[in-house]
Length: 113
Length: 227
Image (cartoon, rainbow over the protein chains, first blue to last red):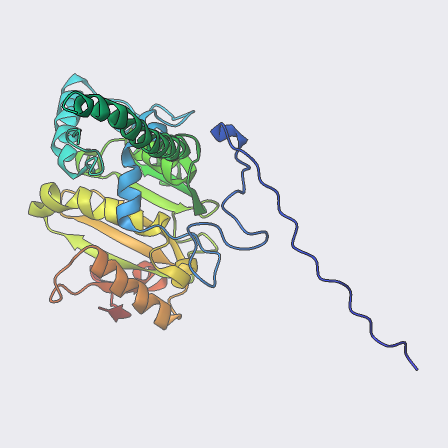
């Protein structure tokens, strides 16, 4: 017959605490569970879904302020076709400013209590 | 007696003040640390997309072949890189007539003949000439956000890409899907697309199979579905 079953002693799941003093200390997968989902996924899946509000909020991210590397020069698309078009484009960009998100979280003034 | 009271007060208040200040300082320090991490996160960590996407530009130059007029502008796979591209290219309404933008999953070419597209079709939005200035850029950006944000959830796997045609006779925006026979997914995508563009219920949009568009005899293609 088989030997009687012997239960091993319970152990705690090993964890460690790391003090983060600089963003570069963050591991690349800090928001993930191994083999599982990351912070912006749907429950039960691994699809990365972003809603409209979040995407719009990222529009003025520091990363988005410079054009992508190796952007080809296509007149009228990635570079102005002529001076007049540049002026027009700037005007259009100006008109579009109103749908850029405001810093709603920024207090307008500080108050001493 | 009278002289003792003023002496008592200054003894108490510095102690009280010191205790309050310490608590405030603690809170302030913790708050500042949290705020710093938040800001730095946004600065350094880009937000990955489910898919890598390629933006294509087509210019109608009749001296060249259709394929020679098609050019990949850039690819991206993070939210920030999408905006870096979008913020530095011309808006669709300012393109010359006869030009297209296409956004397709990386590896899929923006043409019917591509293996991922040829069994599929498109939800087509016809845009009235007078809507170009009010709606065209808004609709196109919304379409792009639907694609990169995976707005169609599990049906997003059916999505191939989207195309905008800038034409004097009327602009068009379409979302291309992989399989025109997958009717449930096609209809769900169409409904969501219409909802995200905020189109009125009476504005009906149609889905056309690419094979029907290619073999059409007249100027109109029959709709396989409409929502």
